[in-house]
Amino acid sequence: MDGSVQELRRFAGRLRRAAAAWLARARLTWPIRLRLWRRGLPPLPPGRLPLDDREYRSDHLFLVEQARRLGPIFKTAIAGEMVTCVVDHRRSRALLTANESRLGALDAPYSALVPGGFLRTLAGEPHRRMRRIFVQAVRPAIVAAHAAELRALTGAALDDLATLGAGAGPADLVAALDRIATAMMLVAGYGVRPGEAAFAQLRDLHARLGPLRFVWKPEAAHRAAHADLMAGVRALLAGRDPIRPSILCGVAEAAGAAPPPDPVLGNLVTMVEMGREDVRSLFRWIVKYLSDTPAAVAAIRAEAPARAGSAGLAAATVMETLRLDQSEGVMRKANADVVFEGMTIPAGSFVRACTRDAHRDPAKFAEPERFDPARFRGRAVGADDYSPFGFDHHICPAGDLVIGLGAIFVDVLAREFDWQVAGDGPRHRGFYHWEPSPAFAIRLAPRAP
Image (cartoon, rainbow, N blue to C red; front, top):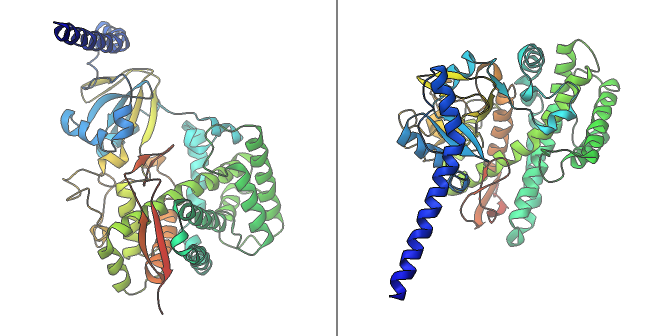
C-alpha cells in the first residue's frame, strides 16, 4: 500500500511539473498569439519553447535536429528568449535582406568601447559607411606580404610547445595558439613585426584588454586599455612608413586621413582584439580535426608546397573547419512584426540565422559530419551553400584574410611537425563557441628534415 501511495505521489509530482511547464510556455506565447490573431497575422513558426536552453547548450546538433523535425524555420528558447531559427542560407539571406529595417543588429556592451559603435552593431548609413572603409582596407595582399614572418612566428611558437614534450598539457596548447593568433593579428592588423618595440607594446596592451578571452562586458580597466591601444596605434602610424601592408594603413587610406578618425581606429582595435580569440579558437579546432584525420595531414604533406592564401589543401582545411565549427550564427532582434514564408516573427523576439547548422545539410555537403577538406578542392561554393562569415552586406570583411592566415598555420603545422593526441574528451559549449574538450592536448615534435 505504501508503495502505491509513493508511486501516486511521484505521478502527481510529474503531472504538476508538466502543468507548470505548459503554463510557463503559455504565458509567454498566449499574449503574442492573441495579438497576431487580432491583427490577422500568420501564426508563429513551429516548435515549442523549452523552459530552459540546456538541450541547446549540451547538444551541438540540437538546432540541426530541430530543423530536420520541424523544417528550416522554427522557434525555440535561448537564454530565456524566444528565438526564430533559420537553418538555410538562402532563406536567411532573403529574410535579412528584405527586413533590414525591422531586424536590428544586437547592441553589445563592448560596442561602447568604440566611438560611434562597433561595426557589427551598426545599422543603416553608419554601417554602410564604416563597412565600406574596412572592405577597402582588408586586402588579401596583406597575408602574402608578411608570409615569411607569419610562417616564422608560427614555427617558433610550435617549436616552444614541442620542447615541453610529454609535459605539454591543454593549457600549453591554448597558450601556444594564443601566441600565434595574437602575433598574426598584430602583423596583419598593424603591420608590426616580432622583434620590434611597437610589436611588444601593442601585444602587451592587447593582453591588458583581454588576457583570457574577448571581453563582452568591459569595465574601467578595459576601457583604459582600449584608449591606450588607440593612442599607441596613432603613434605607430605617425612614426613609420605607411607603405607597409596592413589593415591600419588600408583604413587610413580608405578614410582619407592618417591617423584615421576615432570611430575607424576604435573599430580596428576592437577587430584585432576580437580576431585574437576567434583565430585562436579556429586554430584549436584545426588541430583537433587534423589530429582525428591523419589522412588529411598526409594529403597536405603530399601536395606540392603552395603560396600562402592559394586554393591548396591548407586553405581547404581552414574552410572545412569553418564549415563544421567556429561559425555559429547571425543574431538579430525584431523591432516590428515580420511575416516571412507564412509565419510571423513577433516584435521583441530574436532571429538566429544559423550558419554553422546550415552547413550540415546533406543535400549540399555529402556526409556532413565527416571532416573532408578535399570537398573544397576544385569546387565553386555559392553563398547559399557556404557562408561562414555571414551574409551579403553584413559579411565579415576579413574572411579571406582569416583563411589566408589559417592556411599558413596549417601548412607549417603539417609539414614541419609530427604530433599525437595526449588528452581528449567530448566537445563543450564555451562562452562564444563550441570548443574541443578542455582536456584536449597534443604531444608535438619537429619532423626530421
